[in-house]
Amino acid sequence: MKLTRLSSEGEIFHRFLTPKWAHLPTSGAGAASDGGRFNRPGIEALYLSRAPQTALEEYRQGASITPPATLAAYTVRLDPIVDLSAGFDPLVWDSKWAEWDCQWRKIARIDHKIPTCWLLSDIAITAGYKGVLFPSLQHAGGTNLVVFSANLDPSDSVEVHDPDGRLPKDQSSWP
Image 1 (tube, one colour):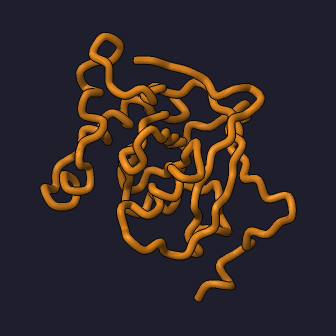
Image 2 (tube, rainbow, N blue to C red):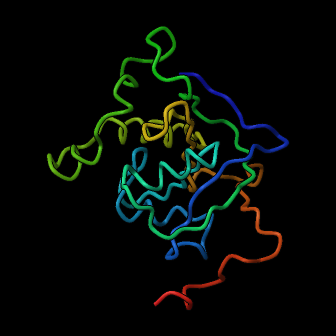
Image 3 (cartoon, rainbow, N blue to C red):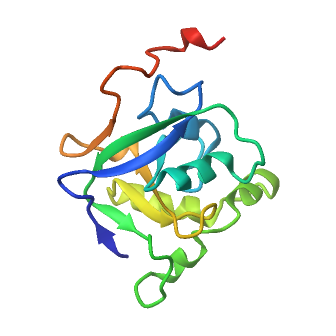
């Protein structure tokens, strides 16, 4: 498994926040409610993208009309993370990682089975990794990062850039 760290200076990532979760921009609770590519339901995970366009395509998930959202930038410092950003290479990765890009929604929600990518995240989380960098399946050439919230320690940092305090502080604005 290829490992890396995000710069001690911090690397910039992006995310489109839905109105419901904009007051908790570093929370992985939204992903925990239904699960995501690299997290089972009940496991908090924050999904970010290296570029704003990738974040937009990930947020849209192929929809023709974009729902309301706020673009947020984050400074991220994590160590160690699994670096799958170049995709699966059988010379580098265990064969289990070949199916990281499985159709997890269909497998979990329709077939009622456990997607391979959830098993891979179980391995990463149990081993103490802070996240996984991986290619975007929504935006060719884009890169995403999933952060495993429960594995963060004081040396790690995931900070939303909101110097003027414009993000909401609670859900009172959203009925």
